[in-house]
Length: 234
Ligand SMILES: NC(=O)c1ccc[n+]([C@@H]2O[C@H](COP(=O)([O-])OP(=O)(O)OC[C@H]3O[C@@H](n4cnc5c(N)ncnc54)[C@H](OP(=O)(O)O)[C@@H]3O)[C@@H](O)[C@H]2O)c1
Image 1 (cartoon, helix red, strand yellow):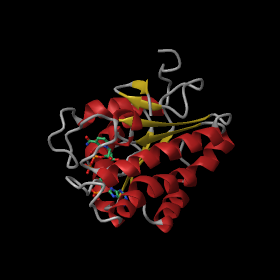
Image 2 (cartoon, rainbow, N blue to C red):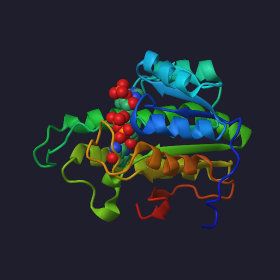
Image 3 (cartoon, rainbow, N blue to C red):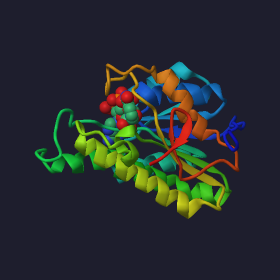
Image 4 (cartoon, rainbow, N blue to C red):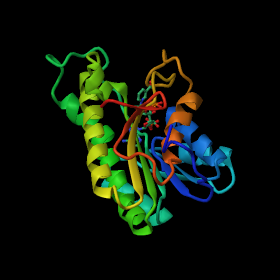
């Protein structure tokens, strides 16, 4: 597809949140393979360091809780800049709830990580990307946030948060459109992780789709939602 060719990202600094397990961990491995200097960010610093040590080379493990501004600021101070940010950290804590009966603050809990957290991390690194005229921000969203397919009724607060994450994606893409920065969202499909043990895809398969958005060429899409490797309706 036009604009979807991959480019060389060797030497680029790539920060991945929620990178101690699941999709985030697999994305780190993929970006490391492509030659990025990977910053493995996780709530538990020891786990982050363990993943970074497994990757080897110049991979770095750092503590990062996306719900804390100080935590994000500390990482920015430590690494200086990121050319690629993969906002992967996420929670799903409302399985089998219904929108009509769930505790309303379940929405707040999901938004704090899945939306505000992703926004906070993007805000920390976007100015540097704009200044250098190059950046890629990938929001690991979900089909659960897609109005076009009816959201995910059995996980209503999660759905609200991923729909809002899609909105954040579009807004940030609009602001950075002419600055060499591409901001996109991706639905990785049903992936076998702690979040969805019954998923059919492996984290490594999902990581290929996620990393593809981190390696888009300069004339690649921005403000786009991807499913199964292709642009899809929001
Ligand atoms: N699995 C699927 O089928 C699927 C489908 C669509 C979208 N997704 C999305 O893919 C992303 C990764 O999910 P996964 O399937 O790999 O699930 P997972 O194995 O449960 O991983 C979630 C990751 O997010 C981290 N996290 C949670 N709260 C955080 C916080 N406050 N700050 C920093 N990190 C935090 C977790 O850290 P801890 O280990 O410390 O808890 C963990 O590393 C999520 O955004 C999810 O919504 C997954």
